Image 1 (tube, rainbow, N blue to C red):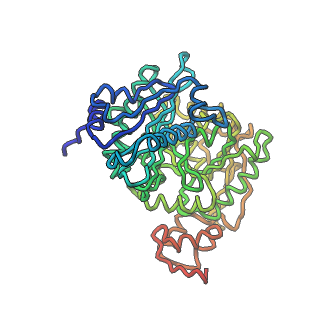
Image 2: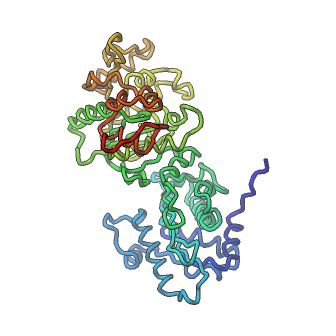
Length: 476
């Protein structure tokens, strides 16, 4: 199979410039005019660029776009203000009767590159408002990126490339939003840049579910974790997690069951007992790993959305991650906060954490992994295991940790890093896989009481998880 030809940034810029219908504005803050220079350098730019500007001085920027409430400049709200202001000026200053076929656009970015001491990573926001039909309202594509090059000049080059890719993709790859997303990495790699958030909206993208684009980011290794809020809107991790007391519960949630909610309820109660945890500073995360989504082979997008729909309907924030190992999750969350964090896990997950085979890829083995965990302010909340009356209840006092790693476990336990949770004996026998089997076989009356209130109705009404169970609103 022949690989598709990938155009260089200048080739992409020239193709845009040669399209007489495309016309708009470039405004860039923080890292110079790295994107627009590709369009100037490619030639024929006069037919594409109405205006280019870099409001580098903060006072000038504020006078043009207004002050942000939090005083930041590298943030989504600043980018939104830039795009809205510049696109409105296009419509105000250009007579539409003289530009009946013109597709207006306003591109903007607000970026910060790595500092001289290399103590702060470069990152920023980039977006474009653009038309695909002059008679329609404009669409928006917004991304957040983390710059991984170790030199500011290299990061500037990367900004120029991905910005050019974004402009080109919106006009020439828009029919397939996933391809639009993937093409942002043309002539780039993860070593250069990490796209960790994307939002696509507008009249030409009404069918797009941005949660699936979030999933694509993780699936294609563009980033290792994405977050979306209960309303299904993709969020930038730092905005959600900065300085927060983060409490995370991992599971398949296929579907979410009463035992999951009991784990969360008791874990939350225990977490809030900590003097170093403030309720008003709390962020709950329901985490689903990519490996969990792949348990039955390739990722089923419908199955993913089914899980997400229920969790969002219950008012929870969802995180999709590529962190199968817990120490990687802890390391990731620690980028955003030094406040106390908590992990709610089951006995099987804890035993997996203490399996040495789990860490063969690390030079320091299990000691390296737990070195990361013990140096963070984190509590592990253990929910017991008792699948039936014949099995003894397992908790932190009697789980079968291998003698070779038992000293690590004893250290964590004796220092209060591992705590048992209260539990409801009536729900300990509930497992998602069993509930799923009953849903698929439509054994009504056998599974409805195993899920939280209202979830059974959602599953039946929307035919989630392959359910063909009859939905009767009056009866339900």
